[in-house]
Length: 477
Image (cartoon, rainbow, N blue to C red; front, side):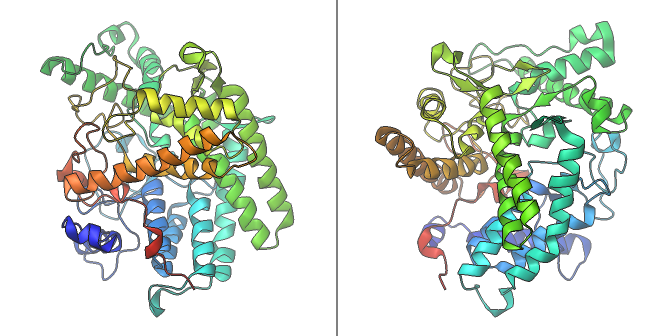
């Protein structure tokens, strides 16, 4: 892999993360930045998903102390409720972004979280620091001491906050999101109906002029694309305004709005399992049992309430729900259901078939199915609507991890399905490497046809564009 990066003139992943860190430190005159920002210049805030991806890569390459620094940085912004803002801002950081000014603490962070991946990354660091040697002596940590120190904050986030404030019901472990940004896929088409209804609530009859128009081909007029961009962003702002009026209190928002997102809940399922494992390592048996039970119950609920066997002509698919109704949009978010470790043959086959049929451009996986003509925008004409077709390497890594797991379930699924899972895992890794090679660097998202990175003026060096490390690069004790 060292040869791969040098051959294509690309910084090694750890070098890129340090470039991003140095850019943040230089911006604010710090001797050392307190966290790793997502990219070299434009994105300087601390994001949960982006930061945890950076921590995972640092753990993989033996930079344990650096990974611990990133994972500990979320504690500074954690609220008394246990919620960790999805984005927390550096001091003196001002922006005209109207979304920011529809929050209760615009200079602190936003009032909603992000994909809840913190515990998984802490467990990954614990295992790496326990089993492998550090990159150098300065990167060594005591994994037990670190985990014991950070665990109470994790418990407040996953235990106090999600269980007490976000569950759909006391007997339903699924959680609802209060803004599309929480699931990181803010412009995904599964949120269109939510945005449309919020615009109607805020604007009344005037909202008829703020309706998204379906695409009819890969190339649409300049005016069509500009209008759809505006409508989508206006819908996001309408959800911001509704949250602001409700004081961003989840219980008040939930009285009228319930969006249960497949991506978000599958990642929460994975992180409840990680919490159970961390609690076991620390000898917290009651916590281990509670989080283990939550993970199992959430997996059962997702399969029961979000898999629709008759969808796609009887082939079946997973969908998020809005106010109890499935949002029939085939997106990368629904493919996160592959993270369910005990997925039965039929729903797993549904996901693999869906990828074969509709998520199979030269550089998979696009964020929207290729047969969804109303939303398929392969040339990024609706610019800045990032989840309406572009391929995101970070999503590829997530699905790849799931496919690797399923390829090893010898006694649970058929040999053909295990082979198909392995083939997709390999293809997704090659896709991520190919996009780096084509772009000559790391980007947040890419054109699924050409592989070229998009918005490079803002996303150059983005952590989401870094591929999984090759096993040969891992330092074994």
